[in-house]
Image (cartoon, rainbow, N blue to C red; front, side, top):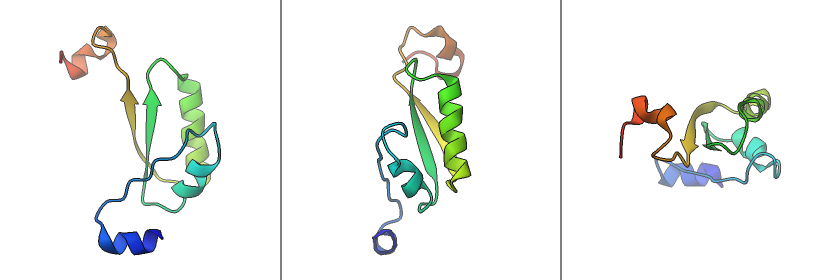
Length: 85
């Protein structure tokens, strides 16, 4: 299916359940050009995120980046980079 879609589209985004829920992300990750991890702020530990990343790489996925979501405006740790909204 992916090969057919690649002929029609420049970019294909596949959303999978979280890594802890099932093996979908690891299986799909091996068959795509890159994996973009989405991490919910203050929900999972850095240790867990690193383990998921290491598991993805170990199983043949290419992790191309991480999106950190649910950042609150008042969280000053991110002010220097993001500024005010």
